[in-house]
Amino acid sequence: MPTGATVGSAAERAAPAPDREAVGQSRSVAAVERAMDVLLLFGRSGQADLGVTEIATALGLTKAVVHRILTALRSRDLIVLDPTTHRYALGHAAVTLGRAYLARTDLRTAAGPELRGLSDLTGETATLSVRRGDTRLHVDQAVPDQEEWLELDVGVPYPLHAGGSSKAFLAFLDDVQISAYLCRRLTRLTDRTITDPVRLRAEIVSIRSLGYSTSYGECRTGAASMAAPVFGHDCRVAAVIGVSGPEARFRPDTLDATEALLAAAARISDQLGYRAA
Image (cartoon, rainbow, N blue to C red; front, side, top):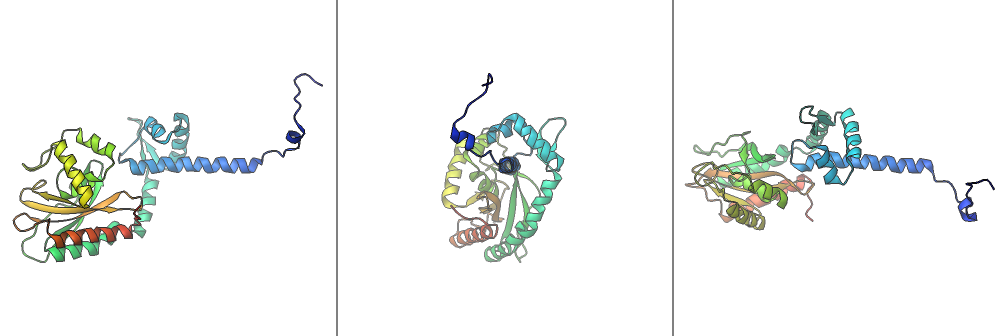
């Protein structure tokens, strides 16, 4: 017998060789799944960009694997690289995919009738807000049919700790995100803006329990508001709807308004594909 030759058992010699095509397909599927995991991480991170180390740590992958995935995604314009910071962000192809989804389930289209219904019921301004990082902004509103009503700025960002709509976003972030937010210096917009982390944590507990938030002059002097989260198909807050009015006449804690707000938020969530656990 030649030196170095290996003698296997009869069973081993008889065993069929691995199906190379099946193995190759399995590896291809795994590679696609990892690439999708990277894309989805950008969608749920709440950050505008991510570094290779952050991605590798979050997904339990090696940096080499992450580099290969990002290179492939960049070749399809799903991911872009900032040459100065060497950090990655979603590319225009990813935005195109998002727009295609929104064309089927447009948030403002789903919320429009609910905003009008809330405004008619309360006689106040009903709003739809979205989150952008550590801020939120109004993207739509319905105003009441009366001479005096509260005019709100659409598209202007506000911090997540000031006002009813802002706190509705803050309360439903995960605990790590909340702690990171409360560790920073919190801006005071009015003399009623809550900037004490202890008080804000108490507010968060209350909002999570009730399902809605209230504000009296915290974001704008003389204005009161109430707001509730709208959950998306991923069980995260996709938007917040709220009702705002002059504090002198609008009482956010009235039963009818509260029930109507929560019901409207639930109906929009249903349209976005939310399924409670």
